[in-house]
Length: 236
Image (cartoon, rainbow, N blue to C red; front, side, top):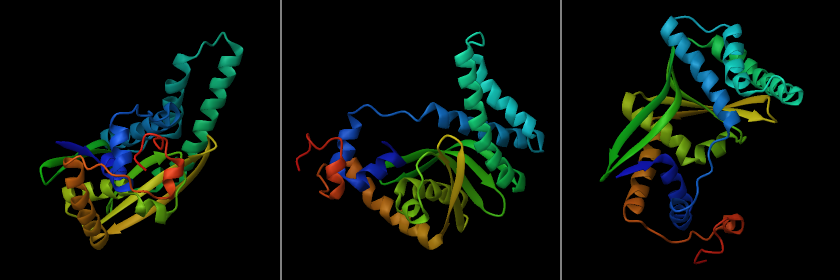
């Protein structure tokens, strides 16, 4: 049985919510976030393959290639919208490029699939970017701003660090969320996890896995029930 970190997170939040999600339509990641993430991945691939960093001109070409081939340049409104979209993307990417990418040492690897056997299941997930320098760190993009406490309380985020910890055996893992706000504003939150934190994560995951394996189904009954999209069909 294969279990994703998202499965672990939803089961930890509410077993009933987890069961409803298994049979519902999953909302895909926004194309805007995917485009930005792909540009960042291309830059790290460029560094790994060429052994030097991508220039800013190269970043601009990645953005142009992602946006303009799908635009009818004879349509003035469509072209202006594409130019604005590219401009917003470059504002966000310039912050990442100047504050993170240019100042990093070491190599970055993209789309790293990781797997760990727990009980009778394989815990599997993919890290968008893993950067190796003085310590391994995971980089991902989100459009939801969170603080360090919220980041730590998210077992899906800690689970990525836990998987990398299991693969590398290192005593510290860093997770960095690059947050996109209002299409172009950039902020970053870093979470440092040591052996003690990662061992706690290990214990938490080991407790949740049997619930998923046995299809445990019972509502958690918290304040979040009021906002739950499955409230009507729930046994609460």
